[in-house]
Length: 73
Picture 1 (cartoon, rainbow, N blue to C red):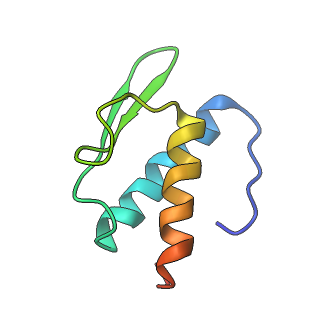
Picture 2: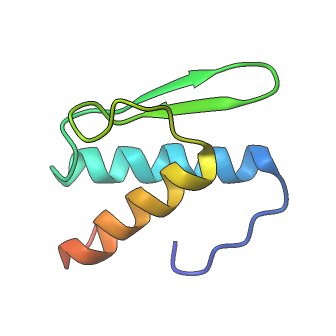
């Protein structure tokens, strides 16, 4: 996931969800929730923020956590 190429919103949301799974397996987040709707996805990372994250915000936040951890997923 070094090179981000997003062709549409669904691809971005799917990559954010996959990155959340990686962060969870690495122990960087205690949990995360993705709510799927026909026209959008909502991301929540409990204990870090009480607010809903857009796919873009979730991707950037999770990517930063994984990159800063120094661990290989």
